[in-house]
Length: 291
Ligand code: F1P
Image (cartoon, rainbow, N blue to C red; front, side, top):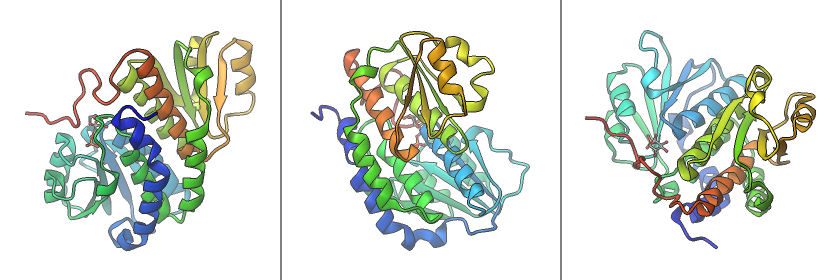
């Protein structure tokens, strides 16, 4: 039963993604064109969505696409367009960066008249994906849906997978004391986002790595009572290695973006078990606004 804003926001994703799908064609002129050299930027959750979107765009053959945390944008580099993701449009690093750049910029936000929108050249607003919880779920996945739709993804199939994700039984996972999320390619951003969700919402120990790098040290953390959670296909043999050390290997046969919905539910359920308010995590605010 939905008891927090974030529960309801997670559950609304299939329907909200469909709304994004219906909107996508009408805003495509403000999104990168094939061949453009693009950087996608954001902070926190928005950065991890940028990471996934960048890999997908480049793999789709649309051109060089980098992703940066807003604070780490390499100011000396030249891009044809910078796409900024910010739910609030108030995050200091993003407002400052958009104000300083002299290349075309597009902001994707939930708030059309935010400070970031005032300094971006173009703004794509998704007000129907706005959230009341501090912890981001549906706004982030809606941005990814938009950027995937712009690359030709089938949004209806994605939304149908999200519906399945809402029914996945997570009860057996909730006794774990640690989780490491893994992904290859565009799923690395999803793994980072899943790990951030559990840390933000539940103060739960989680890590995230590119799946091929997991053997290079982080596997030492795996043991009975801990999870190794793969978004998308895992490298050959990795599941067996995880089994051998007694950790629980987790993977869902869903589009990896829909599989992120399972991880969102996991994070919020963990928070509930720990008596935490997932809508208002310790030391977090809706956005980081620096003096
Ligand atoms: C970015 C962000 C969130 C994070 C926290 C603080 O916000 O870092 O990702 O979960 O709520 O703000 P925004 O720029 O997307 O509004």
